[in-house]
Amino acid sequence: MSVSCQSQQQKVFLEGYEVKLNGDDQCRRFFKTQAISEELVQTSVDALELVFEEGKLTQKFFWSYGDRDEVELTLEEKGMAYIPVVPHDFYIFKTSDTGSSYLGGDLPTNFKLPKFEERPSFQFLGTLSSETVGLEWLPFDLHLAVPIYGNFYRLFMDYSDPLNPKVWNPEEYLETGYEDEWVKHDTKLIFEQKFMETEKMAEMPEIHQGSSASPGHLGIPQWIQGPDIPDCPKTNKTMKFVAQFSYGLDVKLAKTNLDLPTEGYYADLLNRMNFWSDGDLYIFMNPESKMVCYIIQHT
Image (cartoon, rainbow, N blue to C red; front, side, top):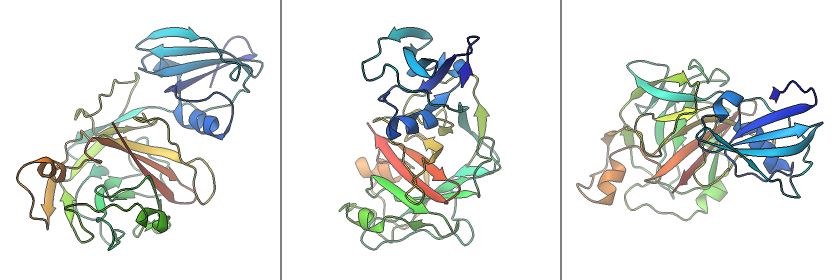
């Protein structure tokens, strides 16, 4: 939250602009998740600056590449009640020689992947550690288990046992009706291990989708198809953003029990970590309930 010299004026800065400013639950989720600092908004590609006078919305500005343009409020937006926020820092992941967080690698000791005979196998994508700067709030090291060759809208996972996560909504997951041509329930795909560290950004970097310069980031999600911020199915509380990884990350397949194709679409798809070919993976968590939500959006 930023408060001006006028005691009754308050400003909110939000990464992204696809939100109805009406104060409903969706609006509140957006405020909670997408809030950034006044410093970061000035270097954002798409961001909002909202001005509240005596608790009511009076002005809206659109920020892009350092340009600030006022946008006329709609009838619905005028007078919207102020929503307090805590701005998020923005961190990028950088590959390193060592680190507590990593992508790929063999399954951690005693870690079990979920398994459904009717669906493509889950893959171990790596571990996000609470020792990593920006992720200190994690209640434990989060081992990422995602069926990246399967089909799901929101995949909720219960990590009450961090070494044995369970699909929270198995009926919904099984109803997706997706069969992969290559990846079956017993297919094993193990990716090379790449260690990561984080770097806090003083400016919002222009993240090109598909760029391998950074495997991903944390702090604020950057949506491809529009905001999809989940509530925890156990508590109904807004889940906290953990990290986002791009399909452009450079993590190659290390081991598999598949007889891989040598050319064509699947040769590329199966030989590297990716999220439905051209998608990004979004990870959310409620640290109290130990629920995790995986979402993939793509162009």
